[in-house]
Amino acid sequence: MIITMQWNSSTTDGHASLFLFRLMVSFASTVMILVAFFSPAVIGWSSTMSDRTSSNSILKLSSPLSITNDRHCVLGRPTTLLTKARQQVAFMTEDDNEYDLEVQLLDDEDEEEIEYSPEEARAKQSDWIRQLERLARTSSRDASAVEKAQGILDDMFETYVQTEDSTFWPTVEVYNLILEAHAYSRSENGATEAEAILSRMEDPEVEFIARPNQETYLNVMDAWAMRKSPEKVESILKRQEERHQQQNKENPSSSSLQPTVESYNKMIKAYGIAGDIEKAESLFRSLLPDDDEENKKLEANNKSWVQIMKAYASQGGTSNINMVESLFHEMTETYLMGHEEYQPGTDAYNAFIRAIGKRRGGPQKAEAILFEMMERFRKGEEAVKPNVETFRSVLAAYSDQCDKKRQIGTTAAKIDQLLQIAEGFFAVHGEDKDRVLDERLYKMGLKIIGYCNDPKKATVAKRIVGRFQKSLDSGVGIPDRLYYFVLVASAYTDGSPMEKLEAFQIALEALKALRNSQEDGLDSSSAGMFVKACRRLMLEGRKRDDIVKEVFADFCRRGIVNEFVLDEIEKTASGALQLELFGGFVEDIRVKIRKEWARNVM
Image 1 (spheres, rainbow, N blue to C red):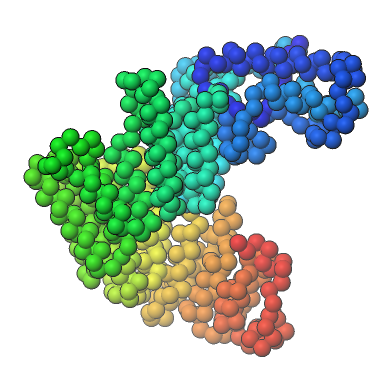
Image 2 (spheres, one colour):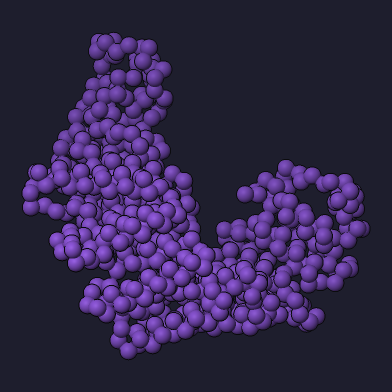
């Protein structure tokens, strides 16, 4: 007969500890059997303790970051299984017919053991790692990425415990990917949660968890840098230095945690994002080679130059843009003087493109640099191979011109051409992560097209979305936000009656796609934009009223009516239709949005 339990406790950190871990499970199981068969009165438990625990609580197996029923709680201290069991048992009383700690008695033959061949284990773990890498890359735009990453860690650890296969042990690399997901998430608490995980990894009393390495500290610094807290970044750097000193006392030959120039690059980044250019510049200059300081322990590397250029570029303004260009040329000159490590690479060119793209004539200059990089790469210069960010930097130049109302009629065709160049380039030279281009690249391109003055822009937008669909794996749908930008391009089309008719048909197709989306992607912004398309592309009359009436009823059923939708309805619907829908004119009677109409408004 076997005692089977689930518990919310800390995960294991060392393969040798698994044996002790299972002994703890067996001991806790024995305690619970005694509870089941002996009177509480004999042992002396107080019946008043029964109010301190909820019924039917189950100890659930999960990772070291899941220490309560909230699987994402990373604050607080873990308790061992034995301590947890003692706490649960102490709360039970003689009145508990159904014990608070659920104990299942199973026959030996009912137990299912999980076994994997070495090949299956490696394949499963590799798949988990790939998922974590993807989630770390997408957490800035996927609100569920952190939750999904934590779930993978829980599954990984549970499988490790069940199989005793070290292949499934969550290594420090796994924790670093979870920290990266926290760092770039949009959560205000992302950095706090990342630092809490670091504290757990540092704590010697927390067993069964990987210990931090250089990358761990860099990820936590990144988390605070992204949230404009350079003082917090500095405190994490200080913690790393203290831990290195402690480690060095125990093992003088160890330098695995000694801060490197990458740590100081994070400080430059933090100052830049926070807008403290003087401190960023001062720190950067302190890392440059100096004839009077030949024994300098740390020197700037290629990333140091990139970070200071980004710091200036992020501030905008002519003087800061000029400073980026000056830094780029200084970097090039320093490289030519013999510092080969300062050769401007792709990241440096991307920062340079971002800066000069803000000038008048920026898009043309940005394109020229892109084509130069492609040509040099084809001739063998791997260091300047364009990446997705390079193309996004060029598109950003066009976006900046659109914001300044410097659009030209051929902008839509130009953006389409750049996206086709990117698709062709990465189809031949791209890595796996580049072959399906980042959807942000398409969003940026479609957004620029939407607000340019090309009368064919709706057609161009539809064509781009169609190509993106073909690049996706079978069964993967188009991100709903792309259809919103198709609606924008349609709604803002100015042209001949035939061009407007074509744009309206494209808007109808986009609305249909959103209605049929598996994610129910039709929201208030898309709804209002479609009504705007009706107003700007259709002539007043019965046909327009019929369409507006039908879609408004649908928007009400879906609960996505907000002020934007209602405002567009007022501008588009005829007086007769407003009387039919609201019993009066929207402006006169001040229509209030019913609660059920807006129940799904975000």
